[in-house]
Length: 514
Image 1: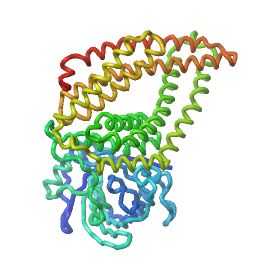
Image 2 (image 1 turned 90 degrees about the horizontal axis):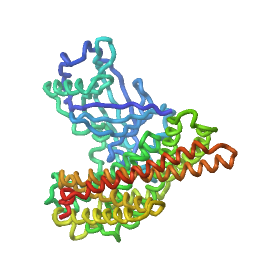
Image 3 (image 1 turned 135 degrees about the vertical axis):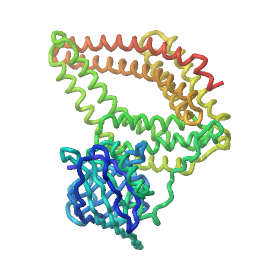
Image 4 (image 1 turned 90 degrees about the vertical axis):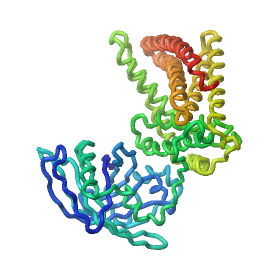
């Protein structure tokens, strides 16, 4: 069984003779207990090329202390105070020499892919733990003074030693962490340059980062390629960070991963003048495949929940027959099959090959000559083309008579609006509010057209379920009622989309494309 905790901590470098600065006067702290001494021995696992460490992930089996076992630490970013936030997943230790538990190994497969996990370092920590407590005696934070001895494992061995101090929240607020940080800095400590012990132990073996994003802020004068690649790399990293959440079936994770996949594909579609279409065609197809697998799971989940909620909110006298049971019987196998398909896809060689291809594109992009030109000279035209495509599709949809043809045309307009939105988002770091305004207005168009498409899809689904109920000898009245509601909802969304498009068409919104 996997146990999950969230860490929020700050580490400091300490010399061999460094004394712990005073912890008196910290907010919320009524008493201090300790220090308590303990010895921890951990064996860290990674691939030969240290893919986990490069991604900010640590995987270890630790003995000693009150949390013996396997620990997987996944980064969640840093706050404004610089404190690292990580999610730690734990499973029992098993026996020495056991392989990495599958429930943890599968959560890092997006990085390891087909590579083998092996021990890469052994770290022994002699720790003195001081606990900061509130007036009730509850733990607010722990201050850990560590003497660390590390040994790398592999073809060669490197030994290293160092001291560090760590402050980790256990129940206190970020305000306490900020106050402790100020006090410890005043006492002579400075923040550690590395957040993980393993990173320091393997410093001489750690390959250079493959993240080629520019350090300088992006502007309209930045090379066009830098602007596009920054967006591409950001969402490539996000795709990988969402993989463990999808595998653990966390709320909204499938939706977020599908959106990220679509952003990546749209970027490749919108900027062929930077990344030539001939070089990205296969990757675009693979991103489309992944998006469809994720989309099937997401759509069945959302549609089933929506119709069950609609029926639950209907007056009891209008719900006739076993309507709720019929909905559950219809969607349960669809949702289970779609969920299984997602997990199968994420463990497939096809998915791993797609990730490899995405990595190669980010690391060694096949840039055109235009990629070196200023962003202002190249990129607005690309967004303008997407914007004009949306305009053509919206006009075509509005000219078509009501019915299936118009519904299909509105769905095509939605896809064009989404692509325009993502292209404008890619420009926002360099072009500022002007691009952000275009993205915001296109998001509104996309959103209401998405609601229209959802209503059309729900209408078709309830009709099918109603037919099944009728053929089974049940009354289909309730499903007819739901069908009528979705019909009215689709019509209302169509009118909202027309208004949203008129706003997106205002001259101010088009200045970016002039």
